[in-house]
Length: 230
Image (cartoon, rainbow, N blue to C red; front, side, top):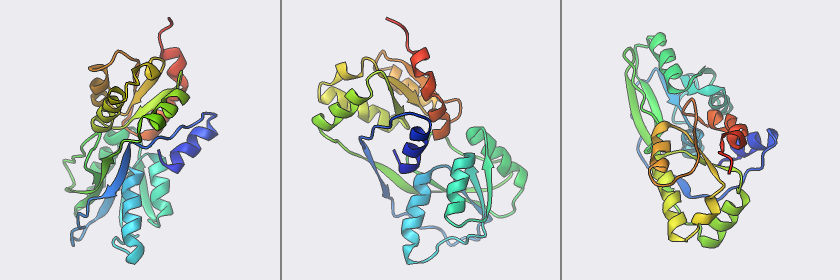
């Protein structure tokens, strides 16, 4: 969980609990020397990797048009110095609609992670995918994981990908912590991620209506009404 997400949760009256199970690392993939018409951002992680790379000098012109998923991602792109930024609401579908409507003649550079909730395709504009970051799995150890899971008893946990969701369940099994999640609800970024959890454990899983972090955060307040009584 990044600082921005934690701040949003606190502002909404929730108490974020952090226990990193992944570390975002640069893949080292080089940005092509192509005359791009714009850039696509669907995550803060991609912008953080770009910013880290640019400590030695700008790699992308700030005059490039930016297509971002959601207003929060758009705000982060503006904070990075991009001036022509549009936000696609309604998740990936809304973003693709904006891209299609733009009718840009030049291709768009999509900076993304190796593990993605959705794929972006456009019938009107060429999209060049560059996997700029990946999530490296971590094991925080039994004690730290148990403290974190105990802290969210009667709360919820965010699941961002099939890979990280499966990793969490594997850690819980490895450290014999199944009882600590009996009262935990899970919020999945997509139906695909939710299915990966439901197929292994019989616990409540909420699915974000759109595959982005703000849609997941909006579901936090529904956890208590969603969980079956008993």
